[in-house]
Length: 343
Image 1 (cartoon, rainbow, N blue to C red):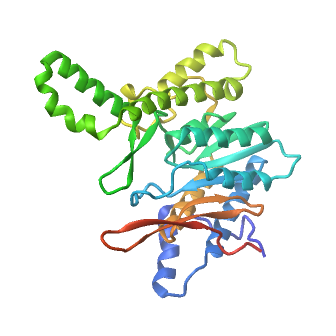
Image 2 (cartoon, one colour; image 1 turned 45 degrees about the vertical axis):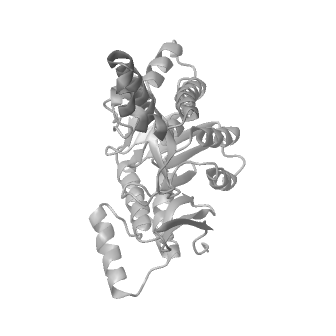
Image 3 (cartoon, rainbow, N blue to C red; image 1 turned 90 degrees about the vertical axis):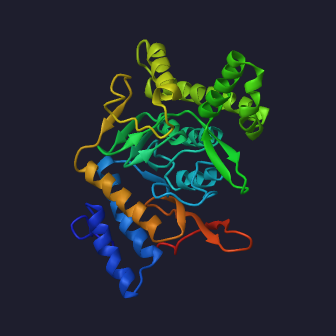
């Protein structure tokens, strides 16, 4: 029997989750992935009933850190997950909500996701219960509207690029920080003379010339994509929208203003840009927080690092585990795995 809104167990705080999952884990009686999905599904269903449209979930593990190489970024394989989610919605439905919890990722992959969403739906709104940074902020800005939990935040859209480390891993670094570092070195050498060049050789050797070009192109692409999406969707029909779009896109992409890639851009900082952005009030506020608690709790007790879910037939994701092997720990992405199927 499906739990009703009155019967279902609700999680208003992280403490509620800890009080629930702790004894289960300690007792050894266990709990299945299907059991935990049913808790999330009941919360999703209540959000759908309140909003009057299907809810699609795209969530990743990132707040508690993780080993290098963990596949929690927005990337091209996400096209598969979003395609499954979109296909689960009835053909006559033209409006959808997307619950988004992500650190960001590749702008080109984000463009693909926006394309498949917009080819199918006339209206797309994004619900952010906790955090949507970087390319996830770009994705949110492609919406007709954005709803944030009072504790939630967006972030700058300046892109990150993958830089190989000595260990053979990929470390993501803000493109603008690489360009700024190179520009500083160039200016210092010019001002102080060529004898200062040896001090900057490690920096120059660290990055290839094509990486600098990639950084510049990625910056331009992020800003162009957001400007285009704002014009087509959020600012469609708004008078004098060109100036407003330019102001908003410039602010989100200005690394020199924000200083760090993870700078929180809260609703009060975004109030002057005319965005269709609202802060959730109850009962939606508590439901968004509950969805976050259940998603983050599941990530913390399972090897899953990414989930695509809805109430109508889709619940799968990606797992990631560290496998010991000489001479060092080697991160091994595991295949996409579907939890026990829903009944």
